[in-house]
Length: 142
Length: 142
Image (cartoon, rainbow over all chains, first blue to last red; front, side):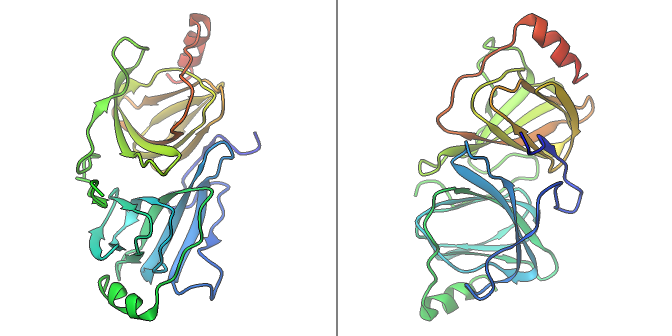
């Protein structure tokens, strides 16, 4: 075992030995003020658990894919779009993103939105929407 | 889709449409004051995400198995044993339980201990320790 068995949370949504990573490569897709931390990535597990944090006013990429997301909010507030509906979300709320559902997460203007996202290790790449879909869907989160 | 896409947390670690279940069948193994809720159990995911809550003074079964547990505390405080070492744990701390490591979770006397536990859907059954191992290991959590 090289990884420690217990990794303490420091009170600010950072963990011992867990790096804060770029959400995506710059320019790969539209997004604003999102970071990514990989909390569990065990070779014997078929899924990975990541923590994403969206800064106040920020938003994730509107996208879809065959693989499912299982999400739990653990910090702050915001809104999510799944398919064609939008919801207000806050601490400990659960969000399931089904195959090929367009989805996006947006933080409140005055609070970050931090969430766990469970995903299969082996997964397809996200698809981006055409502009005529993107505009109306993103409008539902504003 | 029969399951709702968003399941709200009610502020008391219960979720819309999620039942509070027995931790284990009574008499199957020693434990005290533990409940289980299945938060995500998606057929397209190879893992399940469960929420366990240990009432103040309660404890989970001391056991081990080949499959790995990935744990995040989301409520309260307590202690955990993994292998032969024990740690104080609290909100958002991460615990990795490797294959065949003896492990147990114990709530503080005055606070519950609630944690997420990610586990492969296909997994082996837990093994219980002989008494001469159980006593000394459980002593590390008191």
